[in-house]
Length: 335
Image 1 (tube, rainbow, N blue to C red):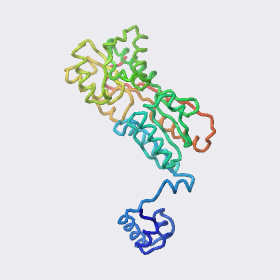
Image 2 (image 1 turned 45 degrees about the vertical axis):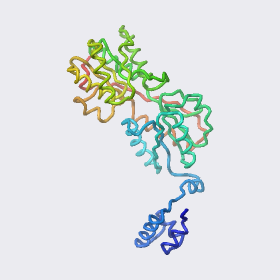
Image 3 (image 1 turned 45 degrees about the horizontal axis):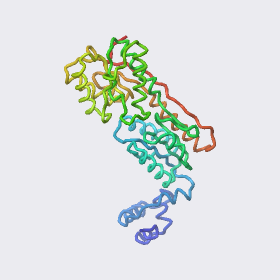
Image 4 (image 1 turned 90 degrees about the vertical axis):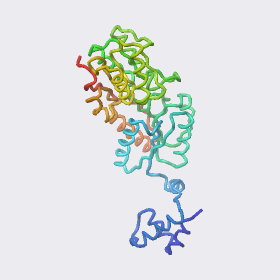
């Protein structure tokens, strides 16, 4: 393994000069700095960040563990958190868990080994029992729908309440046979999908409408391509469907494509409502009606909760839920 002394010897400078260049400290001439950096690249020297962080007692970095990099919601969340932590002088590192228990545990282990100052974990795969069994030494804040043990800070969104408001908006606009697209998680766990499906059912029952199983459009993945095919097939089976509640905006985009394939006008013949209020939602079909789950609120609450936990490990844990609101655009009709 190449050491800092090896780099110094090859570059013809002192070890202190190499250290100053890598830490961007001290007064080092530009020519010397460039020579050291070239030597670092040529020798393949890598700073042992973990050892350095342990010596310093801090990493000036926090980790965000999300199920997937390719979901727009998590990209937006990471962008917001990077800015918020940047204002605090902290670097945000984003890790992917694959939405599995094993992936989440592995990501937590990596965060501990890298000695990050704190961790935000979006929980999907682990159960409350798994979380309760964690021996955590790094400040940790949980995100997501899973039930969180009282000992952890937890920031969540109002999935059921937001979905109920969304479907009530469809009912107010005249829809009576409303499908929920992506509304049943095949694992049967308490997830975003099952929570939003519960809101769909509550809104229909509250309006005196039947939440029939035939109106539940299942998806293998919450992606536009899968939703497009599923909605096209659902309309073929049940031409009376006149409303679609999609569990995410990405699913809603696919649903709109499936309705277009079937030759159905939106919102004249079928109203469509999404959930997440992604930035792209404003540009789809003239503006996708959706639920704003409080993304900015969640990011700020999560950043504040982790900063608080980092500064006071013994602080009383808080369980916070973001406010949700319907954003009516052009894919739904006025009440």
